[in-house]
Amino acid sequence: MKVGVFWRKFRNVELQMKLSGENIYDDAYEEAYQHYQAIKEAGFDAVLIEWKKENPTETLQKVLDEKVDLVFNASSLQEVAFLEALGIPFVGSGIDLVATDKAARKKVVAYHKLPTPNFLVVENPNEIPLHDLKYPLFVKPVRGRGSAGISEENIVESPENLPRVVAKITDKIGQPALVEEFIKGREITVGIIGYKNPEVLPPVEIEYNSVKTNTFEHKMYDNEIIHCPARLSPEEEEKVKSTALQIYKVLNAKDYGRIDMILGDDGIPYFLEINTFAGLTMSRDGTHHGYMGYMAKTRGMSRAEFIGSIVKSAAERYGLS
Image (cartoon, rainbow, N blue to C red; front, side, top):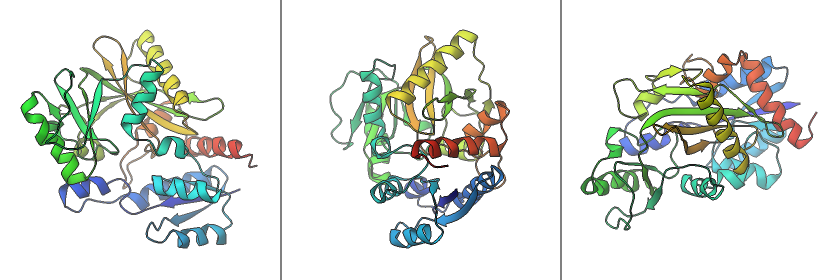
């Protein structure tokens, strides 16, 4: 079986560049190359393919020329829609989940009576809807990734500051703002691999290093204090893992994903978002260290075993040998 590893320029930093107007180091190729190496080590044939969003037919021709059986690392809605429309097998969640934004996912989770902070979506900073959310609030892009647009000012303590922070998202990033109640507690993220019989990896606890939240710089430059496994009691760990697995299933995630939560001071693990394009790198080596990479290491997996198990999950779904 031959695996085509997609990569695209500025995959992890495009939103933050839009916000800041500055050039930011782009590790997209290095990240994809690590995946390519891991897939080769797992015993599969592999080829790197650049996703040309301005000319996807060029990408298609490369896929056909290389006789690719399965695509790995499709990391945007456009790529997933392209692959589904053409019937090309790929690793990861489908358009049914990828096309939804954070607010829609939170609605599904809440419908299934799983805990998530109360929220609203704001499209215009000058027209904040009437609400009864309890301050402090947290503001972020409704389709953000990699903590793009997140700084300490995104924690809003009073109503007079809310329009200004919303405007940072709507005006500079060009997205509606997701405004949710800020839950006091510990940030926990839970990686899951597989589809038919998904496996929950050891949770990561993210401790902040001289900041109040996981800002873009704090996350992308590996300034966090990582605890893996997370510092949880057996009861807390069971509750966190069980809730994460339920969320993974109700959202119909496939092959791999990462559930971000706040374990509140009240002992409840509140769902924040699911990362369908979660970072999988297991070393820095020119890239940001992925949270799921920490989990795989703690689980005792090599990168070939880790990435290989994700590829095998997708292959089984499609009936590929």
